[in-house]
Image (tube, rainbow, N blue to C red; front, side, top):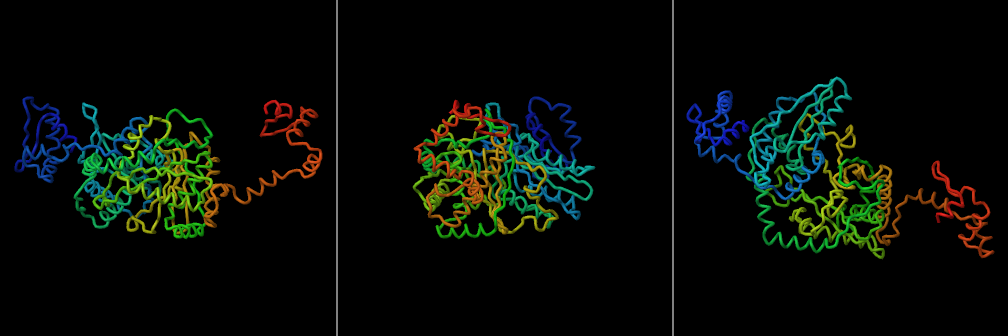
Length: 556
């Protein structure tokens, strides 16, 4: 219906309800026969719409909220830019459920309609005016749950994979819902674009969806919508608060350098966002011990985990100045707690890895940096980038290339009263896992212990390399659980078993060392003597490659 109203508006005309009929007004140019026929064909639906919106005059039509243009939030502005530069499938948020046979599909659709009516973000589209300025506009659109049947489970999984990564036309819609079924298996898939949604929004959406499904009645409208927040944010950041926070970040991130993790492949000219996940589970006792460590240092589990991860990144990049990104929900204002929208902000945490410092000092430094970042969390990440005047590099994320996050599960499930259960990403067939950064570590603190998901860019890393990082991370955590008093270089990246194996390989030949010492022969002299004696003998082997003593000596 909104498309028809938009056509009428664009034709410099207006329509309103006049008693039991409708009235049309237009300017000097009459309406086209095609548009008049559309009005006649949809007359009953048009009367119903105008009545529900109380459009009883030309003025009421022209003042409809749907005609209002709203500015984009800073986060939306950047995401829209990325969307136009990329393939369009990197910033999607899919959530997948196994649907029980008892589920009432009509009731599910009704509940979805109620939630979409409550949250204007889910009815928002994005456009650009003739001057090239982007804006968002609230429509009256709905989302129909599309139901598809498949002959085989394999075909269902293929369709699920495609739907999870299918791009949106943001000028038309920002959300879709599908039910894919094969025999008794039914899967409900919601997909939102990140430009109107974030991780917190998932919980808000499911809570409202549950209420609407159970009670079957409309939900009260919130006092504010996301578009109001976008206007408020721009006003706030243009004042003194924005200037103060921006000054902090300019000072804190001065002369920041990219993290130079050793990659397996040459960095492409532009990120392709192709990613893969590596899942890892830790012993339940480790989480408990690390929480005790956090309490001893008057901080949080998050801070301890971040400190350990920063040490790993410093070792693998050979850098002592490390910047790690961390998401902030940015919902410290009560008015936005129950709002669906894109609020999450990225906060760079900069840590200095001093070889003379202990792990305890690193944890203290991390605690201070996190606290300062939280105080200055309102400043949009996009403004940080602009303020630092960084040259744009399409091959890597600005300021930080690695992200860390901790999710804590309190055991409550938002869908407990709904006839569906969320499918865990780790068990989902070919789960959607784009890489927005070189490397992302998402920790999950569950009742069963700590879980880790390492998401990595497949254009940069082999899976085996990420396995090395994950193993090293576990080793460091186990050592931190034992003690935080050791100096940073003393924390080994190797497990005890691996260390013993390497030491056994490196064990010196005691007879050779003894005889060489008596003769006053050093290792280099002994090697050169071997080159003269047997230059064609094999010195090194690697897979099918071999190198003789003579060839090795020439290269050395």
